Every structure is written in structure tokens, then in C-alpha cells.
Image 1 (cartoon, rainbow, N blue to C red):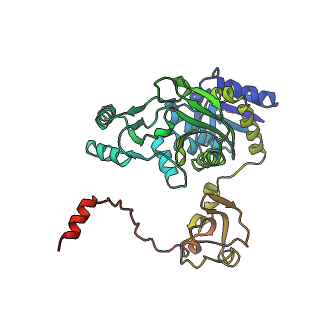
Image 2: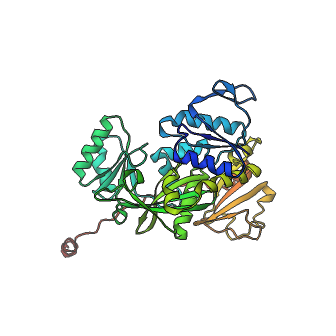
Image 3: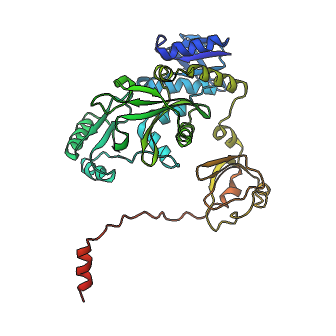
Length: 402
């Protein structure tokens, strides 16, 4: 197998470990400077040039795209994808995870715990936003910071307002996020490869520092994850489109709270803390995928006119509820159920004997017209209203009135 590692830092620990792991397994590996590529586009012939020469054939790449070159780096990865070169870190996964707001927006529609977060631009909206996330202290983050840079703990609302105003005046987009007090100074980094967590560590801040990043002086220790944390890490990476990624989670009182997902997680901290061969796990996964590649159904299956992939939400009262997949006659309507989501459980390729229940979500491939008939008319969303508790004395006074 011939592997290209896209990196601007050939002497970095992570790059050297990936080269070592690939070489030990008998693969041909080359470190390619991401900025030395040229993208060439012609009808039916996507091509890449490296150092002004046509790039030779590669079986797979491992992108190590820094935040400063996200746009060009993802364009290069996207070109490799058009040339059918496998990448465990797809271009859409990089763009989804690199922007903190975008990644949380995507995760928020799924059953994934995340800290309550808000995004505002107008100064008048800052204080109401702080109140919505529970008030001070709060966390303020710039959207594209890495290694703990651009993460600030504001102890009071006045301080928070001043910080946000200063950052916005410097043309920085900022997030306002609830401070998870019970997890102050520590977090979990889970390293996901494929559909499992291959290593995990707890990072603990030192002294008065609240950021636990190893680059900020945090101490890392090996940790065995509870199934809920492992499941959350794997699902978060996959939802964002990553097959290799580092998922950072806070240990909240209500379970794991995903802070962010890193598309180019460093290997030094996790391998040192755990003593595990994480680089080897990535190379082994790469070999499996090149031998038996997965397919992005969203790009491949929608090319047939009138056919596509749709997620159907099963509502109470729908004709499908209470029937098995076979009894539903979906196949007769030219519809195939690919997966069935029930709560936090995902049932892949469900059998015909599986009963469909209300609140299920089915990922289906088939005739769009047939699937459109199964979707009920959109109802107006009901917003939850917070009911304030009245003062008992006020209630008594109201009761006394004629």
C-alpha cells in the first residue's frame, strides 16, 4: 500500500510516528507538503500535481491539515477524494470539525450531550445570551482556536461583556458557553479510529489554569472509558464525517458533554499517557479500508434520476407504526430501509421482521416520490416555555381577592 501523509511538519512527533508505523508494516509512505500541491481540473480527469510534477498513484492519504491552511488543505483532500484515493479524514469532516460553531450545530440535532452554547453578534444580545446559558462564570471561545488558545473563563457578566466586545472589535467571532463547574480543569480526550475508541486519556490542568490542554501544561493520564463515553465519542466523530479524530469531552453531572472534535489530533500526548500504538491502529485501519472501501451514499446513490437517500421520522398515527418492515410493503414502493435509529441505538440493515415504532428514524434509499408520500405535513414547532414560580405570598394575596 502506498500512503501519502499531508503535513507541513515532517519532523513533528505525529508525522514521524505515522511514517514509522507504516514502514514497520511494509507500506510505502511519503510525507507530502500540503502547500506544494497544484489542483488540475478537466472534464472527467481530476488531477494533482506535486512540486509541478504529475502526482504518482497513491492508495490512501492521512491529512494533517493545520488551522492556518484549512481552505487550501481541504481543497487538496477533496481532489484526492475525486481521484478515488481513500482518506480517513474526509474534506467535509475537516470543515465540519474545524469550525466550533458549525460542529456544535451539527451535533445539536442528535442525541449527543453538549454544553449549552450561544452565538451572538449584537452587543445588546450579549447579556441575554449569558443569562440563557446559566449566567457567570461562563466560557468564551473564538471559533477557530486550537490547543486552548482563544478559550477564556469570565468570572462575572461585566467581565464577559468586556471580553466579548473586545474580541468582536478585533473581528473575532466568539461563542458563549456554559461553564461545567464539576469538570473544571479536566477533560477526556478519546481517540477514535473507525468505529471504536483505541485510546483515551484524562487531561488535568495544573495550578490556577482551568484549561487542561497538554500544550498549556496539563497532565495526561490513561483512563478506561465508560460505555456511554465511548459511544458518545464514536458517534460524534462519525456524525461530523470523521473516521479518525480526537473527541474532547467534559465529565458533566448528566454524562459526557462534547466540547469539540479534532480532525488532526496529536499522537504524542495520547501515546505517552497510554503506552498504546495509536499510529499503528490508524495504519491498520487504513489497510482495511483500502482493501474494502466504504462509500459515501449521499454522493453515489442520488445520481439515479428520481432516487435518493432520505431520513424518515416515524410519527404516531403514521400507517407504518406497529407493522414490521415486511408488512409495511416499503419494498413494494421501491423503498429499502438501510438503518433504523431508535433512541441512541442504531440498527443497521434491519430485518423484515423488525417492528416499526413511533419516534423511530429510518434512513431509506428509494424512489423519492414514494418516500415523499410517507412524510406528514409539517407542523408548527411547539416551543417550550419556562414557567416562573410565583412567590407563595403573592399566591395567597391573589386568593384573597374577590
